[in-house]
Amino acid sequence: MNGNGPIPEHFIDEVLTRNDIVDVVSKYVHLSKHGKYLKGLCPFHSEKTPSFTVTPDRQIYHCYGCNAGGTVIKFLMGVEGFTFPEAVKQLAEQANLNFQWGDISFERSPQSELKDKMIEAHELAAKLYHYILMNTAHGQEALSYLRDRGINDKLIEQFQIGYAPTQWDTLVQLLEKRGFSLEAMEQAGLLSAKHQQPGYVDRFRDRIMFPIWDRNGKVIGFGGRILGEGQPKYLNSPETLLFNKSKLIYNQHLARPHMKRTGQLVLFEGYADVIQAWDAEVFNGIATMGTALTSEHVKLMKRMVERVIICYDGDNAGRAAASKAIPLLEQEGLDVSVAMLPNNMDPDDYIRANGAERFRHAILSAAVSPVKFQLLSLRGDHILLEDDGKRRFLKEALKLIAPIESPTEREMHLAELSKQIGVTIESLKQECFDLRQKLLPGGRGDNSDDWWNNVRNVKRSMAPPALLPAYVYAERTLLGLMFQDVEVADYVEQHLGEGFNTDDHAALAAYLYAYYAQGKEPDFSRFLAALHDDRLEQVAASISLSEVPLRYDHSVLDDYISIIQKVPLQREIERLHEEMIQAERAGDWMRAAQIGKEKVTLEQQLKR
Image (cartoon, rainbow, N blue to C red; front, side, top):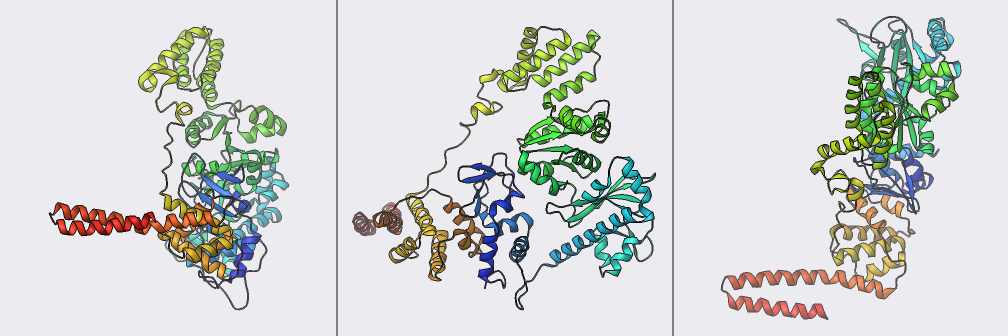
């Protein structure tokens, strides 16, 4: 049986065998091939340079930034907040394994039980709203509205769009009939408590309903657009155990494989834009939940893609929102471009007016750099037919161009600026140079050693890694070999036993001896799953990813063992040396001489 609950070890082994760690991790992290490893941004801490590594042949992950590491089970526990049995159950279901056996069951936390009930109720509500839209007289007006907006029945089915009728208790009755706690359903955001009397009413009424899914495709909330007049125009689910709009992305579950394939996503403002874009064969479109872009959204995007195309509305509000989004995205190291929509149009309007192909090629493929987007927006704010308008435009444009690190990119923008306002590029270069002297730290130009010149200084900013003491290196190397070879483990057990000097290494060795004593073959992911200790799992994963000698013999192993066995003697010699110095300082020469003799004896023993 497993130490984390009544789950047989053979079942855990089967779960590990049937769930490839690359497939599971790829649902949460954008991975790139680096030799025999895959690398990406760690989902457990914020970082700009990938330090999260997945090793397919060993079926483990390890982050060199935060030291998180382990098997696919451990990964799911960390990223989803599951208990050990919950993670095993989830992976078993994904592999079509039956989690039930005999009379064995597993305990789940009350919060997990409540989440499951909430998801079940949301899935039921989505089916109800969709049925009402497509099959009842109540939904006819909403259905006509959607079709008039160019959202056809195929899209309605794809995105499970529905309609919440005007009645106060349509969903209340269904949930009550199915045995759901109405109090819990209020916590789930599906119902609202009545004012000044007991009971509940539907939260969403007379609204077109857009289900919102989590990354696994489970309905966890709704966005409801009012059909007639009234406020708010859009009503989202409230913050619940399931729904946090600052961390959720609309359409992530459907867009994920397309984002993974292309390495980029298209960021829209709303549900309708994503849906219409899908019909235009833009399958990597996502949107935020009717809220401004947050750092949490951006971190999530960074784990999935390398490039983001912002495609917000073409009006002033859309351009302002894009301007706010650009620095957030760039701060995380994303490659950002902006799609420019003409005549204050939104993506939905443009697609209906000009067609899917033109939208893909004339808008998305022609997306411009953030600086060019800002220059184009700036140009629209000034009258260039007047000298005063030209001067103001030039002054603000140079403020955008001057901080650009690449001289080539600066010159490209200056050349375009020269054509627009009829000023020689030489004079623009001089003004740009003068402005850079004022803006940049120390004013020392493009070869400065200062922080902003990241490309030039990236190598010098990297501190050399700390060297490990010889005995630590020896212990890690032995363990790395023992993970791969039973004979090495047997030899080390006979000649060193638990004589490792580092506590974690001694514990890993003891676990490994016991693991092989059960007749098991080397399989690092299965050994890791048997540890059930966060710190030991992290240490083991780190050691497993270290370089170990490809060839060895008993003399090599003996050398490592000798280095390790000398450490207690060296520590005793150091202790005696300190005691001798203290005795001398105290004037106790007899005691100092006695300690000195003991020290010499141990030093001779160490040499032998």
